[in-house]
Image (cartoon, rainbow, N blue to C red; front, side):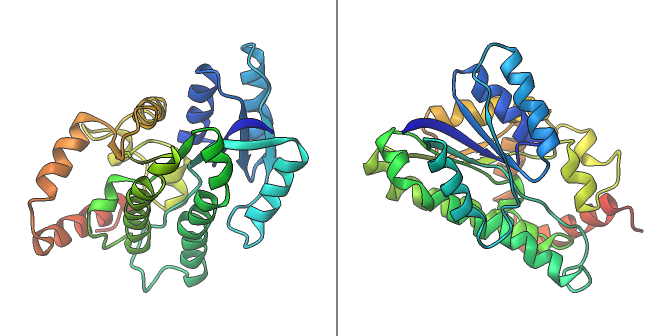
Length: 263
């Protein structure tokens, strides 16, 4: 079967930029997200550069049967993943006891369960092609998260899981990298309930989505276990790790309240 790079959440933001970066480096792509029209426009854009047109698969990875359907769709097209980029995910801001419970469980389904399933579903083909897995986490993985409790916890899982896979799969020649960006101005902010003009749009910790994708690509290709995107974020995380959680909790809680626009 023909090897491809599978990119989830490719219809916007960092996922779209991953598609552009991987295509520019000669990878054949399969793009996955819910919004087919945006995926089709991106595939057309990439094809216009002279690269092979990516395969477009519109599906909701939060559904329990999504990954088996995705695997079947790939097999029917004669392709198999050499690289899996797990970028699909969303967050919700607000107290965990107040946010809709169903939405929070849907977040876990996409950010944790689907990522786990996709990371494990194609190990055989990843090994055949000496490829790997690039999981998009966040610097929030290293912090307690009052105000976005489930999201922060989900990203902590992604980093822990990815680091473990990095060790477990290395003997198969499979690279596994967790990419940890800071604030990025994308559609994620609006869906999460973060106000415009907040930390995602300005500040030393913010990077453009294209730069995050480039840093993630370079780190993955170098076989790095964890990549924190941006010097400012690396410095911030260094000092954050030295602080006790008793001090961090009120700081993060205030930041989340400010980001939500609450007093």
